[in-house]
Amino acid sequence: MDLMNYRTLKVKLQEPICFIQLYRPDANNTINEELILELRQVLSAVAESGYTVVVFEGLPQVFCFGADFAAIKQGDGTMMEQDPEPLYDLWYQMATGPFITIAHVRGVVNAGGMGFVASSDIVIADESAQFSLSELLFGLIPACVMPFLIRKIGFQKSHYLTTMTQPITAEQAYRCGLVDAYEKQSQSLLRKHLLRLRRLSKKAIIRYKTFMNNLNPLLQQAKSLALATNRQVFGDAENIAAIERYVTDGSFPWEGGRQ
Image (tube, rainbow, N blue to C red; front, side, top):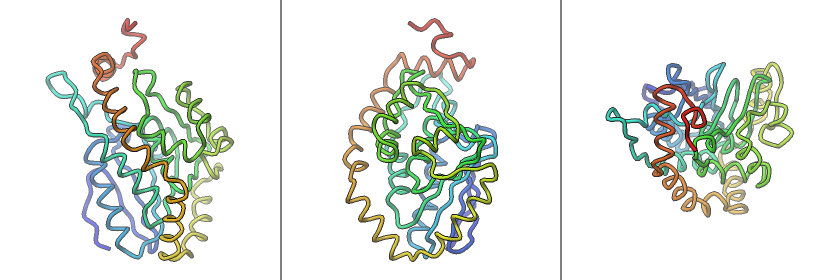
């Protein structure tokens, strides 16, 4: 499988496993359009190859901190209208593609970063991991994350994480079903999982994931509502002002006198 050089990723191939590290250290490993494009290119190449497992990793201190607000903000002080569909389609590709996806989480994962966790087939975490959904603090809704999160941990647990906006530990995430396994030395735990997963055939994986997606078609059914809601909250002038203040001086909405 031939792969190009990427600006936002580090890709390592150890047949039949593809390791993808989200690598935007100067931007807190946040999500921008280039990251989405490059990830979709890698996953499309993996889908057409004999590779059967894809491991997603971040930085030691931060897995992914969500949307890159600084990249969304234009130089004239207004916000770009960013299409949420490519990101939703990326997570859908992770959840339903012809490979087993693993999120190996160390450090912080927040907001849109939770989409990578929720759309993975297996989630392995280090004890240092923390998981949060901060969107409601800015008047936003994790609309595109929610179908994937609900499919993974259920409606009420997803609802609670969203409304509380409070980080949870790896142990708490394990108890609610977001994390499948965790320990202090998560690299060793990952290796143990890969020793088993590498035995699965491509054909078996394709048949199994097709069956599971047909068994629970929530992701496809919820797509139009999720995209419409995302566009609505990002089109709200009050929300945009709150984001712009946060990008400009780091102040949260309640610190800026927002009613």
